[in-house]
Amino acid sequence: MAEQNLYYYSELNKVPESAAPSLCSSYHGKIDWDVARRFLYVLYVKGRMKRTNLAMNTGINYDSCTRYISWMKEIGWIEEEKASNQISLTNIGAFTCSRIFSNNFPDG
Image 1 (cartoon, rainbow, N blue to C red):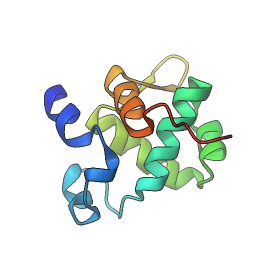
Image 2: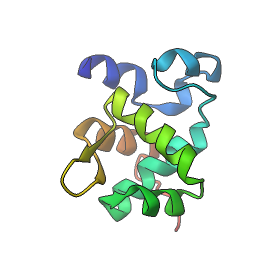
Image 3: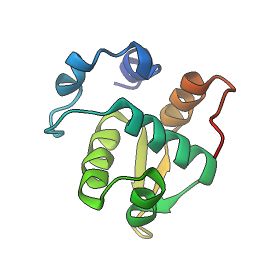
C-alpha cells in the first residue's frame, strides 16, 4: 500500500476529481484538493496539532476536518497519536507535501 500511495497520491494535481470517491472507502463526499493541500501544508509547517487547531488552521469546520482526517489516515498521509490526540504527517505525507509544493510553499 505504501508504494501505491507514493505513486497515486504523491502529486495531488495529477489526481482527477472524478477519481476522488474511489480513493478510499470511508470518505463519503467530494474531496476538495485545495483543502487536502492546506492540510498537508499546515501540518508540514506548523507540526503536530489537535483536531480543533487543525480545523481552525485549515479554515474548515470540525466535522469536515474529521472526515478529511479519516480519509488521510486511510491513505497514509497522516497519523494520530492515541495518547495526545495529535495529528502529524507520516513520511509518505511529508514526501507528498514536498512533491506538491516543490520548494514553492505559499506565503502564510
